[in-house]
Structure formats: structure tokens, C-alpha cells
Length: 66
Image 1: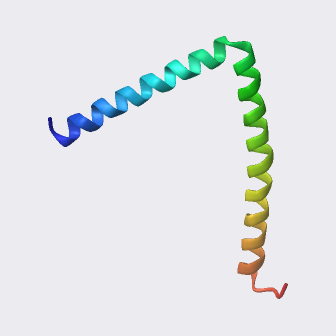
Image 2 (image 1 turned 180 degrees about the horizontal axis):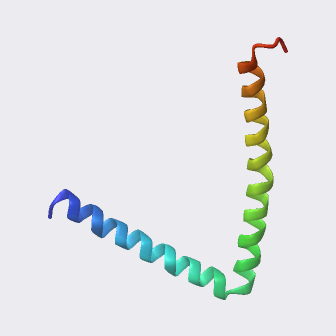
């Protein structure tokens, strides 16, 4: 088996596992609720931190003293 074939097989397995997991989460209401809570928590934590870091970097690049 060549490197390219091994990567293709691995990608197909990962995609099929992801699709199966997504189907299970979507069709099971308790898992769907947990998934939505996790997404809300992740977005609520990462987006403000990203924006704060961008603002800090812009401030530093503007050359003004803090």
C-alpha cells in the first residue's frame, strides 16, 4: 500500500466515523442538547478572547504607549 492510498483510506474512515457520530448526536435529543450547550460554551469563551487579542495586537501595532 502506498502512502497516498493509506492517507485516502484513513480519511475515508475518519469521515465515516464523523458522519456516524453527527447522525447519532442529531437523532438523540439528550446528546443534541449537550452538543448545543458545548457549542454555546465554546463560542462564548473563544470569540471574546479572540476579539480581545485582536484589539490588543492592533493597539501594540499602532505604536501608542499603553
